[in-house]
Amino acid sequence: MTDDLNLDKGGAPRQTTEQGYETLTTQQGVAVSDDQNHLKAGERGPMLMEDFHFREKMFHFDHERIPERVVHARGYGAHGYFELTDDCSDVSMAHILTNVGEKTPAFVRFSTVAGNKGSPDLARDVRGFAVKLYTQEGNWDIVGNNIPVFFIQDAIKFPDLIHSAKQEPDRGFPQAQTAHDNFWDFVSLSPESMNMIMWIMSDRTIPRSFRFMEGFGVHTFKLVNSEGKPTFVKFHWKPKQGLQSVVWNEALKLNGADPDFHRRDLWDSIQSGDYPEWELGLQLFDEEFAEKFDFDVLDATKIIPEELVPIRKVGRLVLDRVVDNFFAETEQVAFCTQNIVPGVDFTNDPLLQGRNFSYLDTQLKRLGSPNFTHIPVNAPKCPFRNFQQDGHMAMHNPKGRANYEPNSWGTEDGGPREDPKRGFKSVPEEIEGQKLRVRPERFADHYSQARQFYISQAEIEQKHIGDALTFELSKVETPAIRERMVSHLRNIDEDLAKTVANGLGIDLPKAAPPARKPITDLPAS
Ligand code: HEM
Image (cartoon, rainbow, N blue to C red; front, top):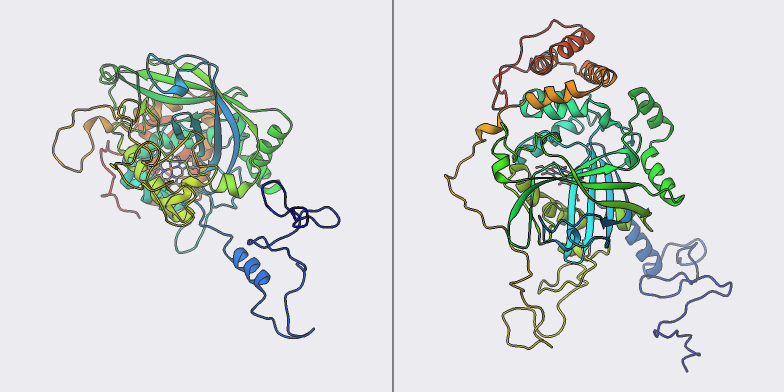
């Protein structure tokens, strides 16, 4: 009987054509006899509504597109693993940071920030460096960039920053470029961006490939050990391949010749067995040490100087497998700064706190259902159970009778229970103060680190920064915006300001007043 029905061991029909191909079926598993012609009334007649195969095929095609990411739309991902090389139990109780030699599966997505999904790879832009670690204690995402600082200090400015950086709303261009008035208008009115501006005008923003970039968690996070002691941490990914960039002229040619240059490079290197590798570095310091800095370690526009807090290398990240399907994995992956595990915790960085809200919110819109965590690339690889249920495309509804707790059903039927001992606990922290909208005084120095970054660059790198600023600002049509930018440069480096002013053919403006707040009192033209 079984043979007559052509069933395999699992009870499913073995659908195979006479030539040995798998049979093409509908989503319902019905074998398709003709995929070239729709069902008509007569040879030249109208189409019949009952053609369920045509309607299902076209319906599915019509719904293939999902919204692209609101930022970081252009990206490329790969699988690999993280291996701990140094036991970190002195600072963290996380399993992944305390078991030397253990390999944890990882998925990494590199991206540009401002460009749309089809934009070229070699744009002058920050690169995303997002890492999902499928640990035994749940997923831990380090959603970082290839630049260690950021444009803004408070998440409430993010929509403005991104609006200014993307296409201007009336004309719909330029795409993936910093070369336009809106972007420079916003940053020139936001002195807190100046450190980031030095970094993004440097060679860092035109990497030779994803393999030759550093990665940074940017924010100060906390690690927590088994005694509950917190330690501040900054995360660094150091490429074993070294750090390499292209120059602007090369980038322009590459974008024209092969807009997929970076994704092709990653695909080819992994496929040929040349697996890219990064070391995980930690900068560790305590609250007392943090208080000694002139700036606040909760300010994401600042780095912690490596001379003061050396990097401790604790593990390696290797990418050794390309995706099976770009859409299923790279497009549907959902990283979130909120995804942390016991042994890791947040700080009150006002940018990080806002990000913790934004990612989940946008991913519901982008992926369409609160069950996007069930998509294989997003699901944990450790067991996971809870009483969340239903919604579109629910794959992991509660099993059995219990879908609530407390319940009086036993271990067989009662479902999962909390674990007060090993479950995630936030580090207890004294919080006091008035409810207000204010920036701390120690967030106010916007120029010192910008200057330190600029003078730390080799002569040729400084020239590239001057050239980049001159080129980008030459695309700005509003004279007042150009002048305002050069007036900031005078607070960073006088020679740089002169070079750019000369390049733009303008007089050196007065230095910008030291500003704690956005400069809203300067006229735009
Ligand atoms: C992607 C928000 C700052 C790194 C995204 C997305 C949003 C977002 C909405 C799209 C997510 C998705 O559709 O899956 C924000 C907000 C920020 C902020 C509100 C500040 C308040 C940053 C910073 C970094 C960063 C400082 C780096 C440290 C990334 C990366 C991605 C991303 C790497 C792409 C993730 C991927 O490859 O899927 N961000 N972001 N973001 N963000 Fe942010």
